[in-house]
Amino acid sequence: MQHRLRFFASCAGLACLLGCGSNSSAVSQSIASLRAVARPSGRTVGAAISASRLDDAVYAAAAREFSTTTPENELKWGPVEPEPGVFSFDGADRILALAAENDMRMRGHTLVWHSQLPDWVKAISDRDELIAVIERHINEVVGRYRGRIYAWDVVNEAFTDWRGPPMGQTERPPEFDPHLRGTHPSDTDPMYADLNAGTNGLDSVFGRVIGPEYVELAFRLAHAADPNALLFINDFNAEGLGAKSDALYRFVSDLKAAGVPIDGVGLQMHISAETMGDRTTANIVQNMQRLADLGLQIHITEFDVSLCGTLSLEERRTLQTNRWREIAEACVNQPACTAITTWGIADPNSWRDRECSVGAERSEPLLFDLNYQRKPVYGTFAAALQHDPVPAAATQH
Ligand code: XIL
Image (cartoon, rainbow, N blue to C red; front, side, top):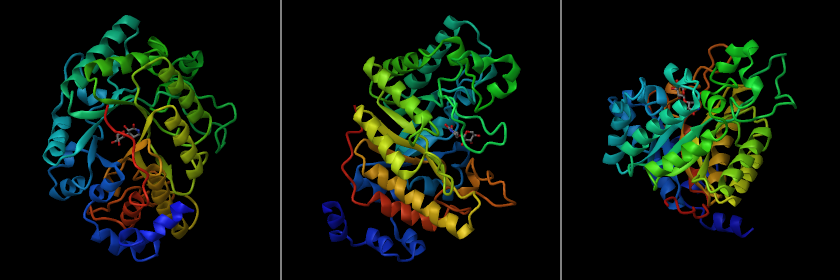
């Protein structure tokens, strides 16, 4: 009750304008920047950036709206170490220059991931060799950016997800049993080799060749290479309450209990307006709380909200707007949630742009339009970032 009263008492300016139903498009245009509206909450607000787009001045101006950046692809193993021991940092350095010039912080994405991984790494079958290769990779990449990248997604998408509807099912089957990729014999069943090896396949060279302990190894190496960087395990479809988020929760509880230097969990937050599954806002709030109770931070690392679905367009737009608002509010109401990053800037550049199966419909999952102009939902998101925030926990070691 007090919470609500405080909100209404302070209902002036932007939050009130939106809360009271005024034109959110006009409000979007009146905002100084997302970083400015997020600042009082103590949360950072970020975007995934592509180095190749930075020559476009309008894109670069939109990127400067944010207080953090994440290179969308430039720090993944494939681009960074395409050949053994041969490193290429040009793309990441360009993004870091933008960050340094504009007082922005940078998140690093990502060190150990089964996807966007060069074939020469995938081909390693000797455990000691793979450990040595991970060690060189992490030392080189984290070491180079020591003190300049404040948070790393050390391990990405380690847990298996349901691979889709093999028999026309549309819901995850009850036997869906998330585990670390590559660590169960069936993950590498030769009968399903093609299916298991894909981006969302069950296999991972790291789990298969090293075993589950590769995760701990990666965190210890990253911590040694930059003791001040915040270290995250990052995953998708683990935002709400369900088999996958339970598995991740149990796993990070064990890491914490074992004294592994892990600072937080990255919730990717690739969500949809219409289809929520186990990722309702109430479930996400509860999941954040149990992670916070372990003493972990939460970063929302890849936020976007797809419009695809079957309801009327108007209904889906309303749901989409609600999702942007509710997730931002969930973060600013949770002290352990310290950062929100959107996965890209403008709709047409989003990795989800073409995911709708209906005609030419686009998923419109981000805050800026084709011309890098603010969409109405930008105003909703900005207002939510200011909605009665609870102070954030400390964001540095
Ligand atoms: C995506 C990028 O956005 C695309 O440009 C690329 O082609 C594929 O990867 N989860 C992650 C991100 O952790 O790294 C992915 O990024 C999206 C899903």
